[in-house]
Length: 279
Length: 303
Image 1 (cartoon, each protein chain N blue to C red):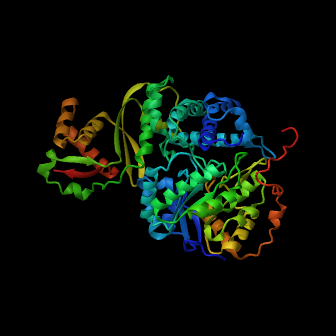
Image 2: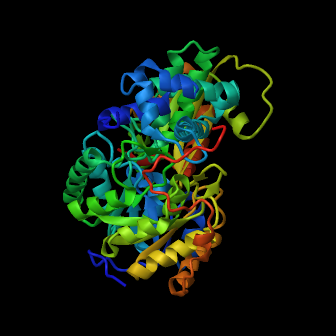
Image 3: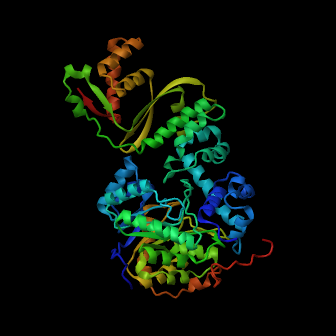
């Protein structure tokens, strides 16, 4: 039988390519054979002088495997490091892309469900891995956020002294803040800097900001105080309210806090994480 | 020599815009005639990717070359994708848009590969309808590239070149002739590449692609990972003699060397346009035999 309908033929070929098992398992899978039965499919694929039908289709299967794994390894170097290449690749092909196949025109978004997938899985240390994957996904997706104007020193200098307490400071679109239960940022730094990581991560509150500056995405670990103020500001509270919250939650004196805020603010403007000041 | 149907000017010798070369291109403004971009890389990208594209488009002609239109898929046209594509074409003032005669997935999946078409009447009818919809929507010249393939089907009732020719006749779309892909498929399916080239109306060809590939012994993979081999240059000369002035682009996507190496490889095409062609390398190529494309070949013993 040669007249396999177009839709059935394509469902069959896609099914074989995406199947996580070996060639025989893929061709014989119930879901695959429901599109085109094994023998009909085998008759339809011509051998070449050097390759049998199954070997020819395997070229596409292998390329699919490599593309999926490469895309995820690039976007999730921390999770890859933690799990090891063999476990990571197996997880991606046998489970992740089976549950979340690509529906996009680009592989850039293949990992968008990876944190959720980890959260719903039974992987060891999944709480830590969920946070690590969340951070890595944020770094990847931050590249495509809209461009914003960036606050300059002149913008800051124009704010009247008496208005500072009531200003609202607006972050750029490519800015994200995270509060984690594990040191996900430190782990990722160690992986990227190829430092030796001796033990499994233990529970430890950590705070990370992800931002884009000069067309490059960065992530920076923050102290809890700095995170608290940044969170207040990015939630739309005034600088005065943010400082009041800090004074309430932390034991610093007003003078100590002023020095810290001055230092943070310089750093934030240099990092380009704000786009405007409203007052 | 034959003008193309849409009077698209010969843009000269271009290279694919790749991220590893961004800094070099922005700093050096190399004397490249034009750039081809992978459309999907830029459809919704922000940040540096968008910035670089805008800078490049200010200085050079930019042509869009897609990999996810999936024109051969049984799925209907993806209008959301097409809207983004049209917007991008307008942004960079692309003179024309290209993609591949292939499918990349069905039932809304994308396996991110250029999957082979079963060349028969049902596929032709389906793809003809989709190409017409795409061309009506994009409102600028549109061409499909012949893809490298590694498998052939008994369910194909016509050759790849006949399919291309009929599709172009029925829709008025153009062809981006990838000479390396013709060579790769000729090797993998055991046909004479010149038959393919001869079957395509010269006026329908609006651009050429050239690339290197990887010979695995049992088959050739279209890896875009090396210099163009001499037999492919000979095919280029053979094809070019039929058409004359057509934009020519060098693709290099794996193990990408420095920009100048890629550019120099593209510029070799200039010399090949004027060189006489004796086709000696083509005739020497061991896997090319006059076996018909659709003939089921005898397998060697033990296979």
